[in-house]
Image 1: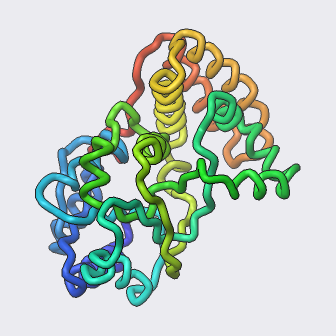
Image 2 (image 1 turned 180 degrees about the vertical axis):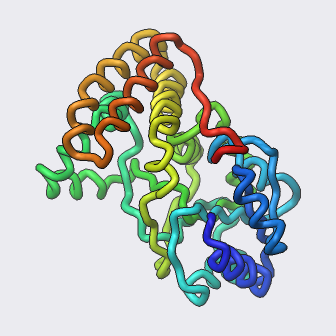
Length: 279
């Protein structure tokens, strides 16, 4: 989160509710702000992505890990129950509990990943909204880890987030492993709202290649055939290019992002997020 008043409010609320907040600084700019504002923080002085940030924050002893991403809006009174030790202790200790209003998504399949990268899934959601809503009533769903509490038992049994995913799919992978172990997944009604990330759009030429690489890692981990999936993702990017140029802001930037992502896949060379000093 880069909004200092919101960060301060979040940390103050967490402390009042008996939690131990810490903000992960994945950029030098945010780090300097946190130091100046005396907000509790940690940093590896690298920008290694969401999974690495959560793993860093999860070091040490705790009963519940509450993850709050940088794309939320909330009132402190709405956030308080999510951070209350009393509320969390009343929940099943081996559970995943969502706090935001984010929409459920189907756990990614091979076809689902390719449709997402190509943006054809976006078109399908608009063209067939009723079919999409029906699909989301199934049990094989997950939500993005924007506002979520994870019990210690779950974290240890599942093995934490998988750092092979630099950006995207780490939450789907975690829930997929958790569901296979019979972990309870639920949601708590709150006023926490999940917004679209502003950072991803600003750094799309670096973020899209890393997100596409995460898609490759997910497909390889769960379905094998890495070389086949590399080339299928390159094809999906080819489909994405005209759709992104026609429907997204800054068309030229979108095309550069697609080219960067395709180049990384063809070379089989893992791309990086924006450097810690530049993010």
